[in-house]
Length: 368
Image (cartoon, rainbow, N blue to C red; front, side, top):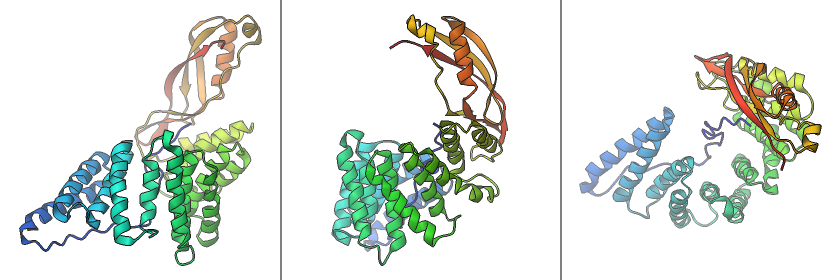
């Protein structure tokens, strides 16, 4: 399954509602030079965010945190905010241990500064949940639920904040396979009622509601939620919406699962018509089916393999299939070609335009 996770991450995760503000003031005259150096690095970090330079973001975030500790001290709220920024960068690099260490220190400082149960703690708990490996899934879920419980306390006075945290926590709970991820649907209902269909929060809620139903194999409900965003995507000019490619990709998968291949092809065509974020990208598989094992071969416990060459059209369909080499017989070859015809791809882009591209794959037939 194709996931273009780089926006939300590289991912499709959202920026949290809480805005980090740093005080650049210092009472110590001797720290003026350090303060100037810190501001220069921090502004460089902000520029790296605007230019989407992930390597520069990490390096400047790390340097800003080190300078911040010298300037403000280890337990100052400014240092904690800088640690939060750096922790996000470590998470982007899948460096969970480093992120977790920073976040635990941040949590202590935030609790001292704002008090236990303050709204400012919600982001820390969500990031803490993300910083734990899968083997600590139960502890991770507890962090997400803690964030949800805190936000719930602010539901009356800050309903949008509560719904946003529901969506944020629901997304990561969904990735954990937790039934608590149903909270996505609660956030979706609120945003749909109070915001226009093209609002980013509505679009995101619809997308992840679709993924929620997909995880439960409720393909028709998943399709309905993803289709809600198509009009919004069609109305945009310029580069496609960050979620559009994924939406079409998931729709292709769900439609194929429900036997609606002709409709799925329309979404392959839509992908080929996009103005991509990346002007040059290789074709990426969206939907694959395994070849059927020939019955007579299976009875004889016969194994083999087939290497197939093919072309991915500018619409993402598989055309011009041909056998490059094989072992085991014509039955395997026939089965492999039949499966390949159902495969769907996001096409290759060159200079912003979809184009045909050659590819090959080897399909192995083995009896367990």
